[in-house]
Image (cartoon, rainbow, N blue to C red; front, side, top):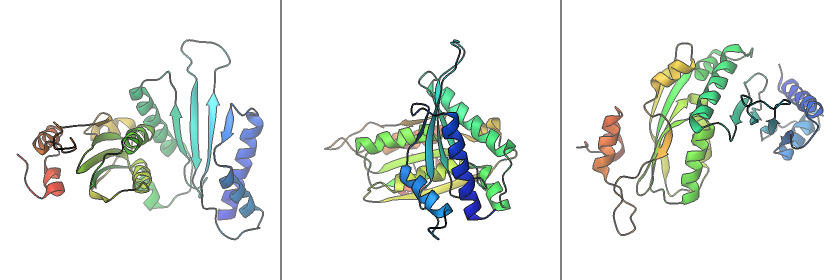
Length: 264
């Protein structure tokens, strides 16, 4: 399938969704510029590939009131190569707990990978069933909005780990490789004095099911961890406590990678 054929499929599916869900509160395209670029490309008015992904939100409400039926919204981003590449889908609901949403989105991604027929290269197939853990170092993490973004994006992408604010800042995220890379792509676009991936772990999964993914996790969710903050601005953490935390999680060797000395 050519790039233009893929773009035509995306336009057709958007038109179909708009006819199925005609009300704005049901179906909303969140980036109209991306759709305009896509149509411009399909109509042969541009030889350049669109630069932005088409993104939309679908709000689903049960027609019959039932305590066991939960209202939810589905946020979807179509990669430029969709349908050759799987869509990025995240389901949210105020009636589901954080852990329920994490499990639901993890199961959904696994289902898409195992049951949706897409034409991919062997390299992409391998990437789709890789579990990744990123160890990110920042010169400092103070800004409250950045700290909120880190937690919210990890939740959205079904990633677990932790964030240690202060100076230096430490972030660990783990989950599906595609989700970790999306997280890093968003984080690095923010303004930082210095930020980099200090260490990366990739584990190829057999089957890539939810149980196998959960087995690889060292953290249950992503939360902010503060270790006896001190210093004039209260922005320095007790690195000894950080070391013991990492040791409890089976990650003690990471401490030396970050700080160049053995922890104790």
